Length: 409
Image (cartoon, rainbow, N blue to C red; front, top):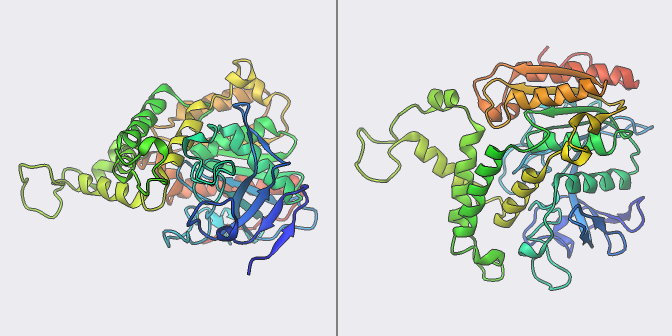
């Protein structure tokens, strides 16, 4: 039996089980839900209103008495709300358990962590696979295109509905880092500390190009059915798998690919003079593609990649990035990785220069890693040390308890 309690935000409702909510996608995993009725629409950057709508989220740790220790963790492109707990679809551990949890840099013994599935996603938050109340079938491409600003606006409504007025910190990498920057720009009075990692203040033309290749792969699949594949009881798995394969290459570095695979053959002594997966890297990419389609919706892939493409924080502030952070009191820690060519260090430095121009409190670390963009999800001791030090210093400045030493010290 599902328990529901009224939230603090008008008609918003907290629902403990996503599967029992009529608005949720079919076969969605169990998760906490905040549901907003028809009289509480979400205003989108496109000018459209989304109503009713919902946001799926998970929490970790305990909110302190004055609600000053809340941390929002923003996930990357194909992430989800299960940052530090088992994913009920894949059965895998939380995607950032190295960073978030008891004794970790984002220590859930001290901080109350909120992680929500993004708007347009496919893990419980309203997205193209959700039911359109006007038709009784899934939205498909009838859902208005969403932006990073819309994602953050939905998270802000969740935070408000949870009765939290200000956040201790907002943290995230890649698309999550974009959300961090949007939080700091749109709600400077609500964000005490911000940590954008391996990210940028806008998507480059090269990144847009890679996303377009992925989207075209999805839409070229005959089972895509102009986005109405759910009604046809089909799934464009081949196109989505190819999109994932192409994207996954950008998450790694040439050095890491060489170290991990080189030109090693896959389960054979010699090349076959055919088009099977002769090389280990081919087999690896095919595996990445096919496992991805088991957990992600094809239309959601179109929506979230488009949201990243549209992100340009400077454009929204008169073409000058520093204007987005003018007079901010938020503390920033910006991190990049030496071999990340998807979001190279130059993108992070542009953020730092803008923050300096706005006289903001900012620190910057470029971390030496051979692992490319995905390094922010992996075991990178310097990243953990930087995060722990920054969070501890910010906690001391905020006047909330902080861990004395990180795990393993």
